[in-house]
Structures are given as structure tokens and as C-alpha cells.
Image (tube, rainbow, N blue to C red; front, side, top):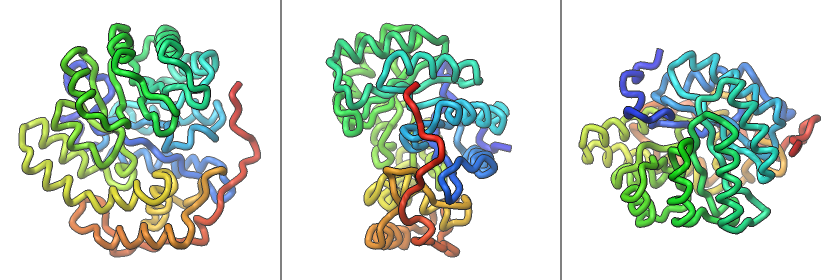
Length: 332
């Protein structure tokens, strides 16, 4: 049972506040490990998450098949059993494919959708606007816009966000751009909710009025994020800051040296919480020197609730390389 259920959402917030950008546990040969998925979902909800984003960047959406993405929604709904919201992330850089995928996700039971800016195509702001509008038109689910120019190659510009805010289904932004003055400006001029999309910036985002966070490090422990959010909700910045400081070495270990998916799986496997740290190619496990850096950072983690590294047993050999699954992810 989620002992934090009483603090689940602001009124009018259909997403939750402490959202985990869920890793997709896999077997050593790169197939989705469904029993491990169920266990991990339950673990993060028990630790304080009131929302789970499946098939996002951290979930390896680029290399998941559409059937796997839809099953992750179905399994999430079953495991959560009302304790947390299930948001489907990812999408597609092809508008037609994104529409069909989100329609299917709605039928599978998703509580909301997170639409990433089309990547690789490098559309103009007019193209971004049209993409988001058409996808949001195609579903009744509440929408989070995912602004992460470091991965997509294009930002959602301020003027575009203001125009998108007028769409009745578009309720929030996941911000991985880190432009706090722009966040403040949008919060002042729209009713959009903001979610921090950068683990190190979770508290700074909340301090200027963000609703919550969508975190990678929360795979390892969501409990400190629950503490931070609850402290901000009651106006206790000192308590929130203290927890932020305790959490900092773990965030650095997870987010600095290799992609967050890779490090989160490496750490979860070392803690004995998933059966394999395997990721799908072109992602690969940490090289020796990267693993050493991660482990050095973890040695600095103390007194972080839910993150006990006294029995941490990393396995660099198990993490080495990447898997080439039998069925490739497709765009149709």
C-alpha cells in the first residue's frame, strides 16, 4: 500500500506530483522482463511515487516496439491499481504514428500522455505547433508537452508554448531546457503546470511554482522526492533543501557520466532490484572508467531514504555491451 496516497495530487492535476521516468527492466538478451517490470513499478509506488511515465526516454522508447509500449501501459494500470497515474511517454517523430500510438494507449488505459517534440526532423515552430495540436486533438487524455532540445534538436519556443496552452487537452510541460526565467514567464501567463525534467533542478523548479517532477533517479528511490514535494507543498523550504542536498550525490551518480537509463539500471542491478542491467543497442552499459566514476559518486551517498548502498554489488561484466533484440522497434 502506498503510504503517501493521501498527498497524491493538487486539485485539477491529473498526473500526480512525484512521477518516475520508469526504466524498462530487461533480460540479459534484451527482452522485456515482465515480472521485473511489475516488481519495479510496485517498488516505486510504495516508495512514494504517485505517477509513472512508461515508455519515455528512460524507458528506452526508441527501441521498444509498439506492442511492448502498449503492454507497459496495461501492466502499469494493473500494478498501480489506482495508487498512481500511468502516463505514456515517447510518441514518434512521425505525426501520424504518434496519433495512432496515443489512441491505442488511451484504449490500453493510460491516464495521460507525454508528447515529445519531434526529433531528427527538426521542424519549424509551425510544424511543432501542428504536431502537438493534432496529437492532442486525437485523444481525450490530458497532455504533457516534453521540451528537451538536447535530445530533439529543437526547443518549444515561448510563443509556441503560449499558443499550445490554449488547447483544452494540453495541461502541462515537462521542462528539460532549464530556462527558469521562461518557466516563470509561462507560469505567469498560462494555466499550464510544469514538471521538472532534470533531476538536479527538481527543487529549483518547485521553488518557482512547478507542480512536480518526472525523475530518473526516482527509479532508485522516490522517497526523497516525495519528501521534497511535500515540504514545498507546506511551505517548508528548509526541509526541502536539506533533502535536496542529501540527494545530490545520487543524482550526480545517475545523471552525469552515462545516459540516465544506463546508470539507473546499473545501480538497480547492483542493489539486487532488477535481474539484469542490460540496455538495448545503440545504448551500452558503462565502460570500466564510467562505472568507476558512478561507484565513486555512490560512495558519497549517505542518509538518503530508500538508497542503502551498504550491500551494493555492481556487476560491470553483466552491464557490458548492449542487446540486439529479436524484434526491432518500428515506426509503423
